[in-house]
Length: 150
Ligand SMILES: Nc1ncnc2c1ncn2[C@@H]1O[C@H](COP(=O)(O)OP(=O)(O)OP(=O)(O)O)[C@@H](O)[C@H]1O
Ligand SMILES: [Mg+2]
Image: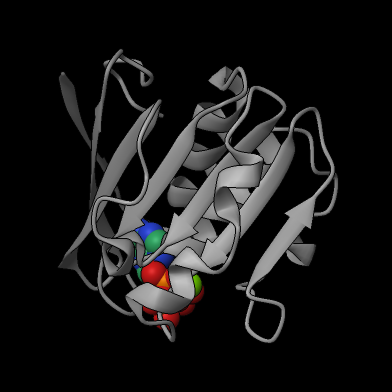
């Protein structure tokens, strides 16, 4: 298991960190985002989407009524936000249908799903370390981020 921490000091840097990581994804990755309200999960997801080839990342918003949003890109992106769901509802989403090499899953509030997600998982924990600073800690099977981060 590799663990790497990167600090961002602005929303723009968080977007850029996401974009860089998105460029490295090959398909089949499951990105689990952990962090409080306003940590930057959705903003980071916008960056990931751009790195995966989504041209207009402003279209990337947390799914609410739809439960999951799907964006077509270099790899199809399945974006879920489990905040309002309980564990049973998570199991009913059918997310396992998307756990293959053609998709990347990005899940906000993934801890709601317990240990439902298995496979090529990147656990990313975002901590507030200042008004506009965040610490991103990525735990994964292999190294994804450069040592200089952004
Ligand atoms: N370094 C930073 N990285 C990310 N966001 C930052 C940073 N500094 C300030 N912010 C602000 O924090 C907010 C992050 O919002 P975002 O919607 O991405 O959070 P979230 O984790 O998805 O929250 P929620 O749990 O409500 O979905 C934005 O308003 C952004 O401008
Ligand atoms: Mg969000």
